[in-house]
Image (cartoon, one colour):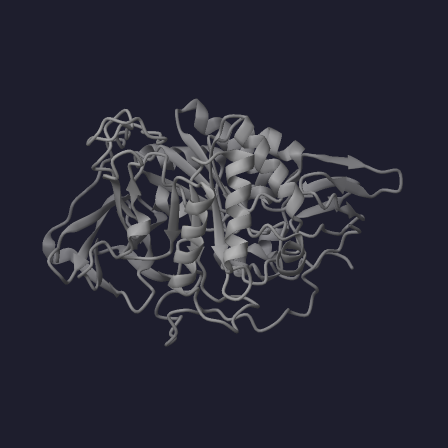
Length: 490
């Protein structure tokens, strides 16, 4: 079946891809993912963003992204590298997998991607945006960066020249050849291990387990900072036996000091017949991991829980306090030593850079508009999209709404003239009820509810009206007329 371009502009332009070979019959074979898709002329591989055009492998998503977003490093299940650091998150379109419970299916499954969600960036624009905002970590994230290989390599290499750290958040279903190229430019790998059951991978992710393990071990041996997360999916991989197999592999193949995160799931895509992961199943998984030998085990997508903090294993002092996505490393010094007992701990501490001096023009108070976003149930975070229509740079401030910290500024976001940018905000204190976004006239603010930290929302909060705090909109209602699986022979 030919690639259906329909009316989507983002599919028209393509760029040369890496890691492929031509074949005598005019087909090409892609070597980026372990599928090794054989692709006929005019057709796409499983990911639907790598295509055969004129006997050459082309990529449709070079520089094509969802909106760049400022987040914290904890958003990516990274707890032992510069706790509390601000990151610039970049997410693309397409994926080498098709998980039944995907939180970002609207962008990961290319057949559902529409032009209104696609932004175009050059490597230079990404790096410049990070430098302007004083952000020294670029995160390649959301749907999965594997199929964004060429753009990631180009931009990460440029970022390194400017002293910027690269973080790669991925399910890592990638060839060893691809992992080798990444290890040359990526500093942090936050890798999602879905399960230790090969049948689970085949059935629920449409991938394979063995290449994930091989690539993960490889980047660990290369000396990169590695943290492993396991999304605990209700009634799918949430038993004590599942947790033990994951923990045993991390201990034996990586290190007992490798941070392991058991992450709470919310129902989405094709897997909505269950609820969010019960907290007690996450707690059980964590205890199993600790008993197995894991020294640092965390729970993700939970609030007000002691398993989100970091403790010194020598004196049990709390060294990093976390609430949601807010981290305060009050118990660590600049050399990652416990302030209580001076034990050196396996954390990487990085000095925070200064933002560029920007020509921000403040406006009188009577020209400031206020936008309120309230938390509800388990939805305790939001993306704030800021669109500056003015010809000058402006400053947008986010303050706490309600509770003992009411009115406290938690974010100051500079926004360049005629530009658009997203920033994540979250519940910061136990008694707050939401946030208020203070923006000058001429700056448009749109809020998007974030159901979990890995979730990239595509519908504004006003549009995504639903009583559920577990299943976000849009709801998956089936495939469109064109097939969403592979056009390739695999």
